[in-house]
Length: 128
Length: 493
Image (spheres, each protein chain N blue to C red):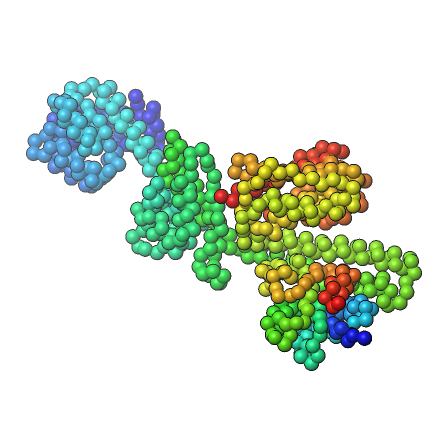
């Protein structure tokens, strides 16, 4: 039997982390949880996940920053990153104006509100 | 003609006349006639005496003998012109040679009268002179009123000639562009005064505007340091000034300070963004939580529970899209869409949109066709904005067209615009609703449309985007037969 894949779910909304985790856990993945970019980084350094479900707008370290940091680090660049984006995050009041899921180093993205079924499909594709 | 006929009332001061002539007979004759007519009359028997009187006092009209001993009338004339440019000079000539008379008029005399003359001839000439003086004074008065008015305006006003030399720049304008030279700016070039490429560009554009075209150019212009606390934002408008034959003889520019409006607009759109985000986050979580429960991951559900949660999800999805559209509207209105414009091939974009919407159309048994006349000239626009416009119009067409209907997308170049049309065989729009469908939150509600999900913000967003791109949107509709939306966008030349 192959090693059980390890997925980390990162979002500053604990309820969303919980719901996403429950869904992914039902496919027999091992799940880690983190609640902002910095928290995630510390947990990744302790145990490297295979895949990261990463929210964008978070305190301390946002999803884009963490994603780019991991993707430019030889130790972590093989972690698959799936961004959770809201199209309407591209508003002038945020610092993400010129960015969307496609223009970062992330492997994939899914728009909020998250369709858990679709997210599961994406995750499955990367973890075969 | 008497005074009353040329408008001298008791309220107005009597016109004053000075008679300078060495011949007493003429001096006194004129004095009597003019006094009788109600003028204030003074006389001088020599040129030198006349000069003294002119130094002391202003006369409206000076009757001047050209040929006098010691001092010629020409000398007096020159002095009068220097001291009182608005005095009107009438020349009396003893031997009325054309040379003397024309010479006097060249030097600024208004007219001449040859000796001998009758009282009526004198009256006629003086009356003419008075009318002329009045007209001059009216013009001067009007000019000074206009000048005071322009100088008091809080908007900046600039007028140039065709060589971009400044004819007028009011104090507001000088303050707005930061011009502080003591010598003033009249006669300088516009660039010396504005020291700004954008304003200079507007003036160039206005002066180069062809005769058959007449548009007011408008740009947002900033001064006082980008983003700093001293930054002011102006609406700069510029248009050519034309003579009767339609040639551009200058440019006029008006600067209007819109800093406060822009700031309030920013506060408003920040607020809308904040509220929308604060609503979105929990709604996203709730949707995920409901999905987990419906998947049975938190225990089994009855069919009824599943059905209720399904409906709850739909309602929440509606709120999520409302918040998205509020954000879009705030974004569009805050002018972000003016950024990042590129050359866009609307034909290619329409193909992509057709492909994107086809599955939904097919599911509703609606045909979705695209008619293109051939390659289209590109437009200069923001890609995401225009995708949003097309997507919104096509999405609406699908929503408001019953099963078996047809939607036709088409595009063509018309004059300086690309026209994109979205034509459907849907429910159509009643005439009384046509004006209102572009207003925020307005939705046409009737038996046919009640079940269609929407927020009423789609078309206002479409309209804002199209107008921000200097285009326009138009709709034609026949209830029961269908609607056609036409979007016109200027070619990206």
